Image (cartoon, rainbow, N blue to C red; front, top):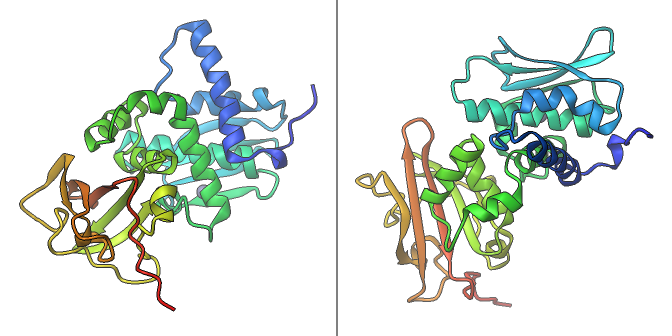
Amino acid sequence: MTETSGAMLTPHKAAFHLTTVLNMYNVAHSTARFPVDVPNLAKHCHEFFHWDDAIEKVVGADIDNFEGCLARIDDDRGWAILYNTSIQSSGRVRFTQAHELGHYVLHRKVRSLFECTSEDMYAWQSDERKIESEADVFAANLLMPLDDFREQISGPVTFGQLSLCAERYDVSLTAAALRWVSATDRKLVLIASNDGYVRWSNSSDAAFKGGAFFRSRRDLVEVPLESLTADVTVTRELEGVLVPAKIWFPNARTGTKIREMKIDSEQYGALTLLELPSTEDVWAPWSP
Ligand SMILES: [Zn+2]
């Protein structure tokens, strides 16, 4: 068989290919399908693509400034994935390993060393860092295949459902929520905030097209004072409560309600999920 060229693979195609392999293996051996055993997959990955340069080891290392790293080893014959041993969360380690595997599958012809920070991992829809965002899209697709994810969500999505998905795939709640927001046809906006300001936000395509997004990378965006997110007496609202859309989107129609869900974490601040009615847009009225 001929070698599959890495240059032809998109993050989605590459992850889909490996997902198919894992599905077949799972059926043949009756092993647990989730969470994905990334180190084991990484060591066999070259076989599935018919490549010579294998990933020879996946090991924890003392790499203070980085979350993970993919590097050439053994006189350029193979590769190693390193991950930061000081990270306690197994979900973050798993996502990091999958991200580095993504660099191997997609970018190993371009560079021989990839050193990645946590900022790279969670900026996975930003355009400025194409390589990093491709590795993140690969990781999200590999760890949380959409057909399986869709089976876990019924009715309007809640943080409760997303938390169960995070457990199923052993990823962070943030990673699971980002995955769902990137895939849903509903109007969802995911917001991470700290000390009253939006750190980053991510809108589903439908929400974005309806004007529901925040330019938190460009502007300082304050969390609205009347929002559930700003209410320090509420630390968890998993199912969501209906609030006036105008609180978050001043141009929304009076009377329109959105569902606001929230989880506080001492470590990361608040994670908020807003769901808008599918029929409502919140663009400012057009004026010439
Ligand atoms: Zn990276």
